[in-house]
Length: 103
Image (cartoon, rainbow, N blue to C red; front, side, top):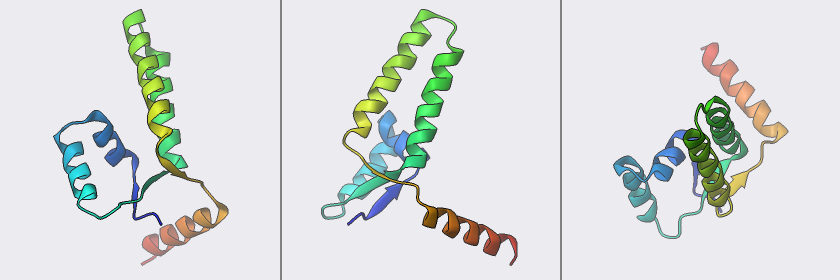
């Protein structure tokens, strides 16, 4: 069973391996056998960001960096549970938006 679903910002901090990311990992590892996942939306956002970086590259060094990042992303996602986007999720999201906009 999945205990935590990380959003794009949290996953990016972990991937960058900075202090904030290490703090997130430390908290997750404090839980016995954590089951961690991301949504397909997080994957899409990260791929889109990498592709945009590559598209804007002005030098071969920037291109290389962009493609290395894309390759790293592919490698990372091979060990991450990705939750699909389903119709029920759309309805739930719309209901919550309606609720918060109309209170």
